[in-house]
Image (cartoon, rainbow, N blue to C red; front, side, top):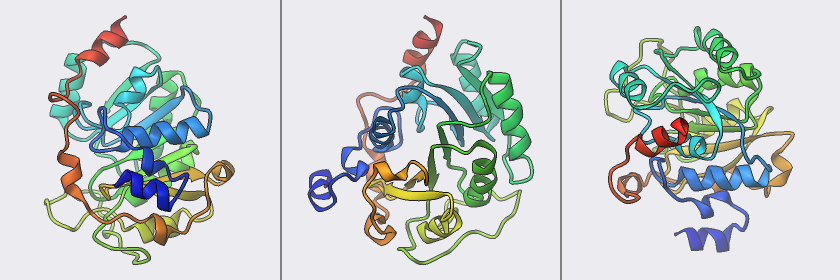
Length: 251
């Protein structure tokens, strides 16, 4: 599948996807995008980090990035805090049910505590509901070079659909979650350009407009990937843990 994508769309980062600690192939896509932007290290924020064992920035921490993990589930945050050493300036962990009303203050406070500027390199959002309204505010606050947002691949481009905003929204394991790719592209049109979608049809990757010239210009209809959720079940070796990261941060 990646070979076919590389042949049909040369330069598409999705052709270089691989999994280390991401849900499917996001680690390789992020690495490819960052390499083209000459980002060897940087600052990230991941909203919806889960337990830390499987997300879009665990691998970045192992490559000496620094950043912030945010999740609304207290058990996820408890696991992270119990497993990882506190290393000032490397990783901040916050428990918060993120909304468009609280995300700006949350990010400013956490980035200040991290010792970072409010302009970051990568923002990743996966909260199974209000992803788009939260992403709009969060991107305004942090102006990330790279923006990764989960999209609802049930709706092919250019259909524009988004859940009705509700700060108390919780996902009920059905199709009512997030926003379609069309809604994301429309919302970020003046600030970010869609670069690719991963083959599993779960995440859309955007680059800030002033940097997007480093990537081939393609229409969103070409870049859209349908839902292939079976690809998220693929493993990279044995079940993931936080142990290698604990060793790395503690060294």
